[in-house]
Image (cartoon, rainbow, N blue to C red; front, top):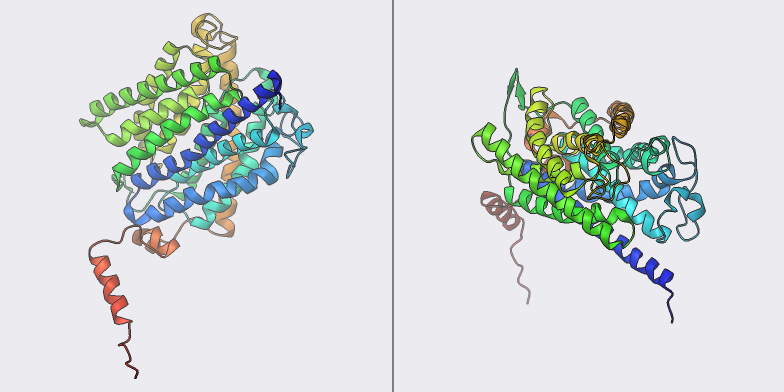
Length: 441
């Protein structure tokens, strides 16, 4: 069969978009490893279960409602067409995605893995004290309504897009929305038992830094689907530029978080180092196309420092975030979005405008600030209402006794690790329950 160049391009673009989407999906494994490792062993199964189930919940919620609200034809505030879409014949309902020629099913899948990522961000900040069922319900609400409505304003042809707001791959759409929802959840839930006593903050250590390190590397890898894949086309020049700015920001964030942690804590904290990498990745996500290589280094370098300082800042405010999700995703989602207005440049990037530091004036920076405030205000109010509604109807937090014992046994009836005395006890229980053999002739 002869293929025209146009048809061949569609095939190549589709393969690229799906491959990038598969990398973003694999980031679920990274989040699961990072979050479980930074929490205590008695809550490991609970964290893993949340990270596993949340993508399934996101898939159903985003297909039935969220995709239409985010990308459907509608008004500047919300999409109104394309609910429970037939992705073969449904392109007419999603004109905001006409800029990419890949099939609608590929468009949906790539946007779905982003929605799942936003929901997963919340998991870590509310870890070790939230009811499993309540978290699942919130995840469904978030991916069906909260994330898509704010996302429509930016990626669905909404009013922020019309203003010229730029967020290429989701520093605001994915990471800040997830971060704001996580912040409201952490505040409404309150801190873990023993985390704060009076004005004193007690450190609660995670249990598996090998898991955290492997998870961090998986997330770093996954970001090469997250950012370059947002081209939604096999454009070699754009993909290469974005991959390199992404990596430079990650590397800079790693180094500056290492130095900041070493300076403030007198020891290089591995958890801070890994969060510095993730902070650099979050921050570059908005402007990975609009920033030069130098700009990417600057954004990542500040992100690593901001991540370390934010951990201590939220601790001072007595906001309990077991994994540093707020420092990584919220703080640096905001920073990366604003950095576009400062460092966008037509020289050495894919940008069509210049930011403040390149002689373009403050116009783009002001637009970016408006977007941060609009999305932040909406998400805090809407997610706060959702959290409070869940607390009033089904409860939000496990009992004190269950929290102290661990959510693995209380919520799931199992332990993460069966070692030593547990193995002996289990063996004795099994042996005691086995009847003596009956001899028959």
